[in-house]
Length: 260
Image 1 (spheres, rainbow, N blue to C red):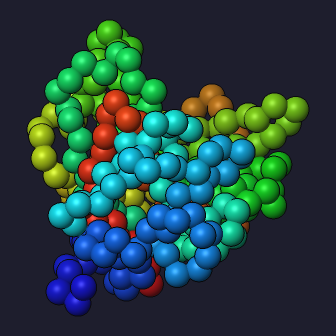
Image 2: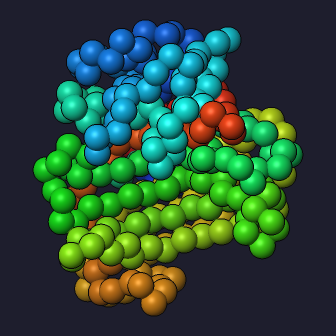
């Protein structure tokens, strides 16, 4: 771990301490038996009355974690926090990075989910806040409706500000790049989150930047944004999530989080 180079985006933001690291060399980092106890990096229980993962949904072999759950449950595979045990790893701010590979060539019309690397509100996950919560998607490999729902290399990166007013209202700032992830093999998917700023990175390349503040609309803004949109994130701690579906497995080489 001491020889791991600090990513340029993390270094620039002053995030030089590696506070979370898993290279999947040790199967003991996963709570395979669903104990929901402290001491693990990843938990297989899921919130919202969703079932826990079962044998075969996630595997570890040759320092690679493969996520391919039978029940996609909104691409929620393993999480760094146990929703029912109320324990684990969660963060506010940092540089979040994972090295991931998945099949970018097959027809993806009949899939129940897609490769996803993201984070979600611990308070909402553990039923402590059902009125206002946050979601930050570092990367989603969504299929492309304009291409007959095949996968065309689409890189989706989104910040969500969820507000419940009768029904959940999703204020979001999505970024979509088609024909981005078109080469097989490992790629690094990173996201910088610091007060007032989100940035998304692909193999170290800056793709997009969103700024936000309590007294203004975010930039860039869309019709769903409001003054103070995303500033609720300043009160959140977020758990890490890796997920996909049985028809479209996702391999993960490592996950890292850098903070001050």
